[in-house]
Image 1 (cartoon, rainbow, N blue to C red):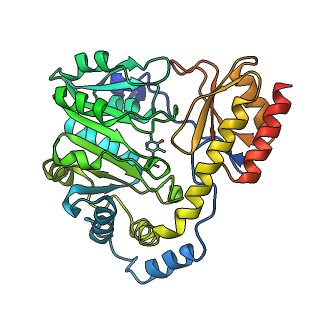
Image 2: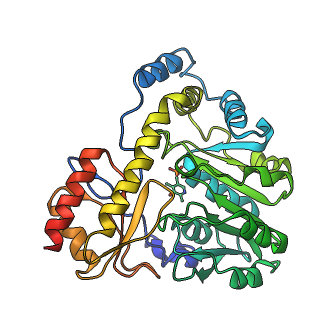
Length: 358
Ligand SMILES: *Cc1c(COP(=O)(O)O)cnc(C)c1O
């Protein structure tokens, strides 16, 4: 007998799915993934290892991540029952969709934004309603309001600050949408620590609001893969039923716990990054042919007006500098996104950009 044709076994809705393409980063100045560019604060890594060694790494992790969830709850001003942790917030995006979305449902997604909302909607069998943001990347409220009241829209994904635009929205706008929504409204606050304003307090009023956060950015723990969400207990109770019991390993639980307990150590780094962002923004605005967009996160989106973004991207790469090319994504013609690096990295980037632009 002939073996089966594997592509005929594939779920049809996955045929068009474009995989996340890994690329080499070693030896480059990495300003492409919005990580914290600094090493962990002094002594923190050693403390993580000491703490982790004191736990039983030969046994399964705590499936409820109780200690970490208690610390997160104290940090965010909520109850531990309102917190779910995941293997990066990517896992939680998928878990939300597995639990509340799926075939026959829609995700409402204003764009441009983080691509994982649409990717995981497709993987979990749902469909995407994409609505373009305004020219200045603010939310298209009337268009969203019209769609969000549909019973078929089970999840709406918003981000503030939004990636890759850096734009934020206000409480009035969110309240307006929450009042109309028939499904969950997820607000991704991955960059909360660079911005300082959160919608967590609104959860008391709106049990269909979900806040997503991560340790990958401000806390410099991207390699540990720890994300969390905050929501009403009615929401988290369902997610505790569907999540994989051992989704977050002991070492990562410990790392996030230690980092959060020592959060004061991060303050100078965060201040330096925010100050660096302002410097970088000013420098970019002064460059002929470059139009940066205001940002409240640790990266800046900019448009190249004289040279195609893809060429600028390639020529920076040839000079050892990686940034993110967004040309090709809808609404982002000739746009590039640069992460705020350490001072020396920022200077090298600006010099190289000047060279590339001639
Ligand atoms: C980086 C980022 C995340 C973080 O994902 P993790 O899986 O926690 O590393 C989530 N949302 C947005 C918008 C991001 O930019």
